[in-house]
Image (tube, rainbow, N blue to C red; front, side, top):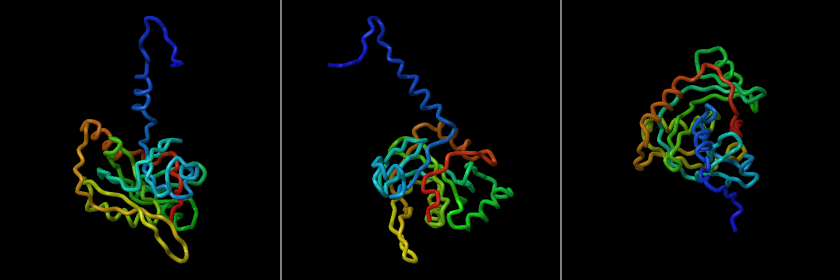
Length: 210
C-alpha cells in the first residue's frame, strides 16, 4: 500500500522545482574522473574501480570503463589543491607559472595541463576533464587530432620503477554524436572559453595522480 499523502483537489507534485534547481547548477559543470582504488567513491562501492565517473559535489555517476565523448574545446589550467583550492587559466600570469613550477615537487598538490569541455552522449550532458597529472597530460596529446570529434576513453595499467597505477587511454571513435541543443552548446562553450583568470573551486579526488 502506498504511503503517499492524498490531498483532495490537489494533484500537483511541484516536482518541476527540483528540475529547475538541477538545471541552475552551481556554476560548475561536473568533472570527469578515472576512479582508482584510492577514490573514495570506489572504496565505498559507489563506482567500480577503473570506471569513469561524472563528479558533481558529493555525487558521482558511473558511466563505464569505456566511454564516448565529443571533444568540444580545450583551455590551459593550473591548479593548487592544497589548502584553499585555486585555479588559474591564464598561462601568462605569475600565479599560473608559480603553480607549474611547484607541480614538479612530488605530492605538492600543484597541477597543470589542458582542461577539456566534453559532451557525453550516454548522459546527454556536458562535463570538464582536467589532464593535470603527468600521466593524464601524456594521454591528452591524443585529443589534438580529435578536436570537434568523438573520442573513446578507456584505461590501462602503467608500471614504472616498481610502481603500478591506472592511466587514461584516448582513441578515435567512429560513433556519430549530435549535440541535441545548439543554444545550450554555445552557452557552455562561451562559459568554458571565458573563465575567470583565477578562481576557487572543488578539487578532484586523486588529484595527485602520477
